[in-house]
Amino acid sequence: MVNLYRASLGLDTLQWDNRLFAVALGHSIDMRTRHFFSHINPDGNGSFVRLALAGIRYDRAGENLARGQTSPSSVMRSWLFNPAHRHNIENPYFSCQGIGYDSVSHFWTHVFISPPTQFKPDQAVPFLRWHDGVLLMKSSNKR
Image (cartoon, rainbow, N blue to C red; front, side):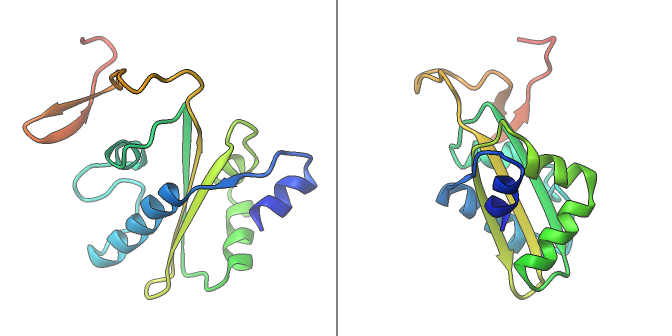
């Protein structure tokens, strides 16, 4: 449905990515099992940290959440009604997607990325650092 919608706007379709699916499904299940509904989990980790922990590198990333919809068409209508979610769906820079749906809770997580253009495997991710076993965002004014 997302790709049909994007094609109707003249946008490139999004490539399915099983790694993004795993991150999205994991977040949907986590929201159900730990009783929250947010882009940030109870540990304080958002979508960017979840992607980094899964070893997924990207230039741009986005995430849509929904709850209560029982079909792809109903969740798509909801996302298109919300300006921020619609922006993610219509973002021409995104090229890959994964959608995780927890059928028990009806929680949906849709993750989008654009893969890195010139990332070298031995390069460190500059905005993340480990501290006491926790992955933290590094402040832009600190090294």
